[in-house]
Image (cartoon, rainbow, N blue to C red; front, side):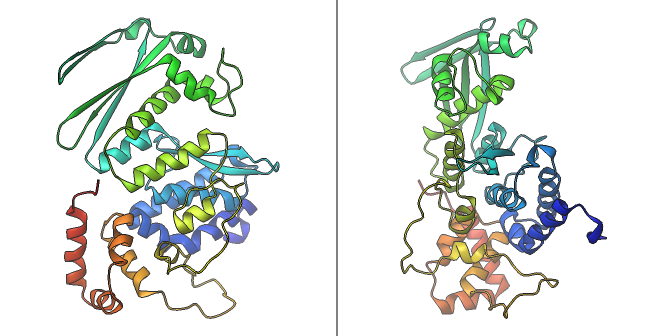
Length: 347
């Protein structure tokens, strides 16, 4: 059957196959991993990505998996879009939608709402000591879907965040501040009128800008959220992250940046954990080495729904004999996973 598949689909399937175990570890659920792989295949065959190499599509998609976001445009969590590099090559770029940031906050017990405020709406915000009162009354009947009307009449975006302790944080981002963010993008040349995605989806882009700015001001201390912000900041600048290096080391650098000189470093559990696993059909040139016990333990903790950053940090604290002991005792491993899942996040 596979020999009759279109060349690009066959190549995408071939690149996905050795990464199945890795995706399962990242997503924390085999069924969710299958859905992710199916989504990747569907998105990768989208005509909009026709000029992108399959390798760049998979690398950008794996970056989304590391953040546990599905690149399904219907969900709005993350998008895979074509990007033309300075050397003229077209590759795939990951952009995180505002719903992706909302999803990531909800995972750690925080909640955020965003409201676009138009010229026809009512908005007041009062501060009395520690008391803050927000009144917002939208006039939905006056709103129009025309991009020109939206750009001309959107005045502010209000965001409200509720912490896991119930504390409320308010932010009002003005049109001038939104425009300042827009003009930082290399794709935006005219201060009088947006272009591209900013023209077609000005409200959504304004909401995303407000959400990102608000998140950066919150005392979250969450590794995955900070990583998502870093990846998206590079994309917003009109550049592209080095996804291959990010997938191996969780380091965010621009693809055109000069590589750091190689030096002797301690064992990188991140890279070892994310090393693609050979399938039965693969024909390796030499015998595949036995997986490192530390990487195996980190993968087992992630499979038990421990946050990836927490699993790697915990494994680094163990001696070799303790790693082996936990791998041989599933009951103790379950107890450790439960303790790590319920441990309070570090500030």
